[in-house]
Length: 204
Image 1 (cartoon, one colour):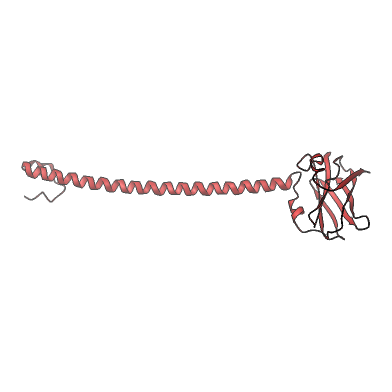
Image 2 (cartoon, rainbow, N blue to C red):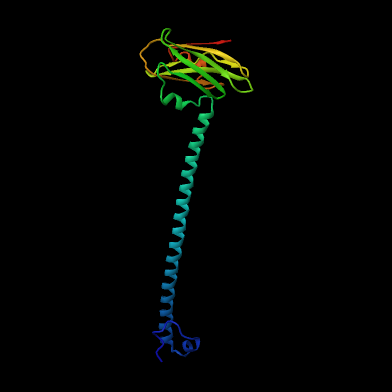
């Protein structure tokens, strides 16, 4: 009876083997068991590695998505804040004969350039039903100069104030403007020494 070549036999057949055959069979069975154990370990390890990679990729995508949302949220906050005017500062500029008339942060700013006095004149009006604090105006010229901000003034609901910003030179051919509301980086006390400008707000 040749059972040495068979890895699996019944217990009765094992008991019928002599000592040397039984030893050979046990050694062969041990080798087969070791190979099966090794294969299972490789398969399980490969599955765990795939799962880990998938989790890392998913985590990476989530982090990138969160980063994009955070950046988008910051941009939107900037648009709605006291200085949410980057588009106006860096966007298409107006010609010297154009009139700026827009509502921003509850303030309607109407302003135009007067070549004779080399100044920008107009009005700001509170279009909300609450008092707007520290309303001020800036004008950005095409030559990189910035006029203002004007002296901050509190505007009651519906209240209007005159605005005048005078340029120190005429070497510009475009401009844009925007109002600011509240306390921020453009506070007049911090900005007065940084720009060569003058501004005035006169209440009607």
